[in-house]
Length: 126
Image (spheres, rainbow, N blue to C red):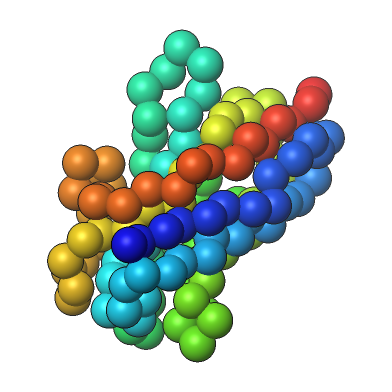
């Protein structure tokens, strides 16, 4: 059974930083592309960042490029989202996701991900 568990969310002032973590179990982590998505009240779930399997090429939404960094530690089965220069518009529930098939590339589309965490709240106060 695949499980993804996010942590690291919280309340931060605008301009501050947070690092989200996602712990994965039940899959051969190294071989699966991972992504971060977010949902804000009244908005659809949107792509934030993704990282390929293995060495980890990355992709970012334009809204976070240059401020957020996705990375992975395959030995620890963790994927991270380092968020710097946070803005009030970054306030959302952040979800970790995994592509179900091994060796698939990056996708910005939520339906391409088969497994999801429960989400962690990030609130940025202005």
